[in-house]
Image (cartoon, rainbow, N blue to C red; front, side, top):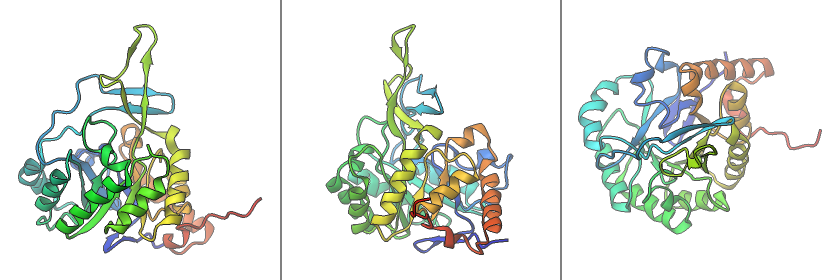
Amino acid sequence: MADLKVKIGTLELRNPVTAASGTFGYGEEFADFMDLSRIGGVFVKGTTIRGREGNPYPRMAETPAGMLNAVGLQNKGVDYFISTIYPRIKNYDTNIMVNVSGSTVEEYVATAEKLNDLDKIPAIELNISCPNVKEGGMAFGVNCCAAAQVVKAVRKAYHNTLIVKLSPNVTDITEIALAVEGEGADSVSLINTLLGMAIDAETRKPLLSTVTGGLSGPCIKPVALRMVWQVARAVKIPVIGMGGIMNARDAVEFILAGATAVEVGTANFINPAVSVEIVDGVNNYLDRHGFPSVKQLIGALNLNPV
């Protein structure tokens, strides 16, 4: 069996496969379907300083080769997470990481500070890229100065591994990646959802209450692969890739493009045990191709013409 261990800053993952925020709840919802200790980590759903009700329904819609969502970061707030959720999930034998969002720099900082003291939360994923809220979120992720500002402030307040989730809804994602790397990010994760919309031609109405929402699933994979490849060549910190990963072959492609680890998102809605299957598939790939360690696969894309 190949060595699947990878490192994100000082954070060690037993393998490069993790569950993406917003698609895996708090991990406990999937414990009946899979052994959580088999995957490298879980990014729990988006958490904010105060509870949010999210957007009005309808807020999900199926599209060809993907889905749109406009959930809007519905959660009960960081204090509820600390008092109620954390005690239930802290002893899972995997890395539990919290996706953090906010409408202002101060909200991001306040949430991160509260998570500092949780000894079983080794990392946070700073979500500066959510297209489903009317303020904050993506507003920080599409501007270099704003992205740098929020990361700099959180870096001063948060002492563990800091991962920054990037928006694909920009002209040059490498500029944002370099800006957050410069302010102390330990890693970047990408891509978040692409901004999209769907219309019901019969009713002449949008399918989402917010009109637009975040597009995910296999349809965004070529864009995600391209952006991961570009960012991995631009920054020195580890890249976590996501966007349409449905199986082990997809995961391997992201690693070849330069990702140190991957996040599995929309596929969890189709097959709740898919992450474990991807771990096994990556291991099989390494064995078949004679790689003793997954680290040798990171960025090993052969650019020579066929």
